[in-house]
Amino acid sequence: MENRKDQIVETALKRFSHFGFHKTTMNEIADDLRITKANLYYYYPDKSSLILDVLNFIIDGIHQEELEIIKKYNNNLIDIIIEILTMKNSFMRKYYVLHITENMDWLKGIDIKCTMEEHYERDMLCVEVLFKKAIEAGELSMDDPKEAAQAFTEIIKGVSLLHTLSDVITGIPNEENIAIILASQIRAARLIFEGRIIRNK
Image 1 (cartoon, rainbow, N blue to C red):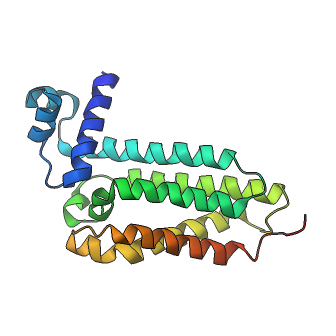
Image 2 (image 1 turned 60 degrees about the vertical axis):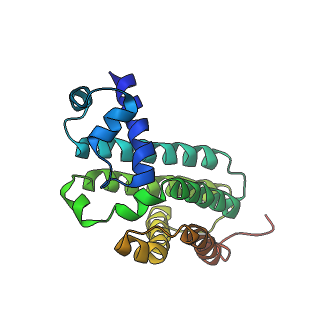
């Protein structure tokens, strides 16, 4: 069953990322898979449950790549942070239509709160792991890496929202914002951490 569900999720993701959640129907996904609508509903009784699995699929991919980047840390905190931000930005570029529709009113009826909270917690944990590595290596001066990870995560997400707010409101994607977001996030990261880096180790 898992293989079939994986196929459904990957097929749905392609359509969602092109047309958005709202404009995609279960009939269209079934047609893409060349299965009956009844067969699709056997695995996913409604579109909401399919959307949740699609979101989890994307989130898992982001965090797997993030952990791999963190493993490469070698007294190069700023470089690692920039690589993580660049990786996440590439996911945003690929799925920008989903990014700007995740806050739309019609999605509020879907139980995505736990999924997004889990994503946020995993984000903070990854950042905390990176900060601890930098502290242990003697590169970073910081008293509370957990609190700092929370603050940094909030700042980075806030910068992203700042530049996509108009797209979220209109529902019209402006992909030029994606490069602006990355540049702003990198500026913020440099401003926050360059004064905390311990030089001449």
